[in-house]
Image (cartoon, rainbow over all chains, first blue to last red; front, side, top):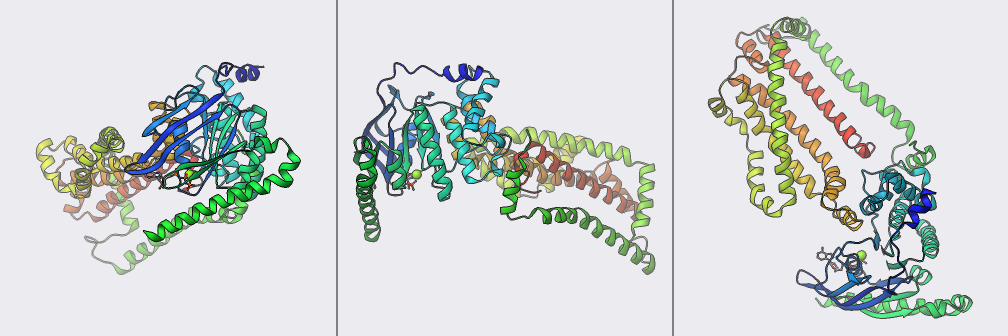
Length: 276
Length: 277
Ligand SMILES: Nc1ncnc2c1ncn2[C@@H]1O[C@H](COP(=O)(O)OP(=O)(O)OP(=O)(O)O)[C@@H](O)[C@H]1O
Ligand SMILES: [Mg+2]
């Protein structure tokens, strides 16, 4: 009962505009190094968008800009109508290296965002929400354990539960499965697919893994490197609407196309290195 | 909350330490040091009795034990009370000074750049050479010993705290802020906990230096205290009593160190299997 009210007590989103994220001519420097050059894109409610690009092209930087942890040098990042640097409850991040607090138990880690953001809820309610997501992701029995007692796959489950527990309208995931072995990655991919479908959240998903991107996304953004630019914006919605044709024909086509792009990027990179 | 057994077993069976071996090695680590001490004492006792060196310069365990009994019947408890007061007050002042400055240096780059070289230099200096000066300033009473303890131990704590704050994982800071932590909660949930092991390390170093400070301070100029007692007995070649005083200090040092380990385990339970000590 309290669970229900707690869950539905999340801020109403009836009036949110269709566009949740709008990146407008964003430029970003680290010191005097140009990392992102004139990046623009917009992402709508309920979209699952993957970002693919060579290592070091600025994908994590872009995600940090969306989260508001970094500010653009030029241009703006607008989230739900206001500047991304304004802290609000709209976003939650899943980190590549988990970023769990070693001194908090699994349950406390999952509650982290709720403790910070949902001061309006009583401790009991926050605990219930945290346990709901822990059970949902199969870690109910590990609630009292510390992160050092968990395997990598379990740690990232905690990371996912922590992000989903605050019920963000936007989930930002930075290569969430790249530190995991192939089987765990596959299992968690399924979990994420299920959770996202269930709750229709907008997801920005950074990955190196082409199959991961193709399976999960509605849209794929290809990033060019040095400096980071958006090269292509590929929508898969239409192709995926015919699942048979998607699996038999288009999947391989798109995979080849993405692979060509990445190969070109890596080749360009090594040429650059050789010349310098 | 109980720990689900199957999960921890899974971990340890794939981990480096096998569960059975860990039980044996635990027993070993408990009893081997005790055995070593007993053997050393026995050999010492036998050598002392058979060789018959000059009792003015040499002693052995049973004589030292009588020396201890004589101390315990006499000035020992009053000496310990005074030395203990000097130690505790000195440590408390050191901690009170080290915490704010340590955090300031850890969080403010400018303060760090401005002050770190001086503090490192002072830490590396054998500041004990200042002890006579401090006695002149603060007199023969406990104040001068407290001052010596403070200049000896403050920097160990301070430097470790600063190091701990600076070593805080930026990924954790970023995550806490991203999930909505304000300034105070970032301190409470990220910086303080990650500093605890560094703080305890600083305390351990400080305790060692503080004990040296107390004993040497009393040795140099005092009328009471365990250091004064040792010095007085050494002067009159009461070697067994003198060595008994030294033994008391050794035992106290061991006790304090063990208490600190206990404190760390209490303060940082999440490291229980990590550090192992
Ligand atoms: N704190 C920093 N200071 C200076 N340069 C940085 C910093 N962080 C990242 N960079 C540089 O910015 C560029 C983009 O980094 P970013 O982490 O966004 O890349 P990425 O696309 O996420 O790479 P990867 O796929 O390896 O995670 C890199 O060339 C990196 O060297
Ligand atoms: Mg990255």
